[in-house]
Length: 120
Image 1: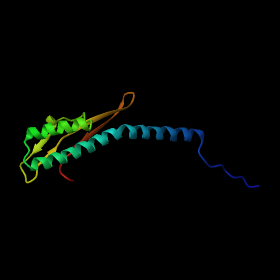
Image 2 (image 1 turned 45 degrees about the horizontal axis):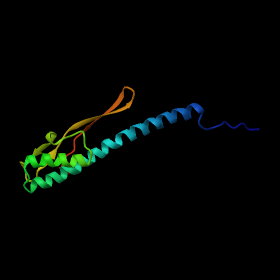
Image 3 (image 1 turned 180 degrees about the horizontal axis):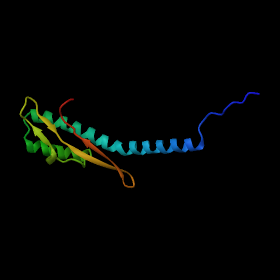
Image 4 (image 1 turned 90 degrees about the horizontal axis):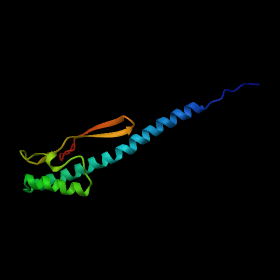
């Protein structure tokens, strides 16, 4: 009679895989709002750059960002944080900011973001 070895996951293996999967899910769920905010800021910056090319002043651009930011619930950046460059053919508006996301207890994730109206 041949003896076949058993294959499969042990209970310990299932627990470790579950902990890893839970951590990945927590990180994913916590970063989704940051990505949504980044995309909203980028969309607003593109719209503002188009307005600036049509002759809008710096003050109008900053106020426009604040108004649109209230609609999209943007709290990380305000109109005063914008860097507006009208020196070239097209207006370039960008901003740099850091978001810190608390994960578990004293562990947090820090993300540096740099949205710009310039296509990359």
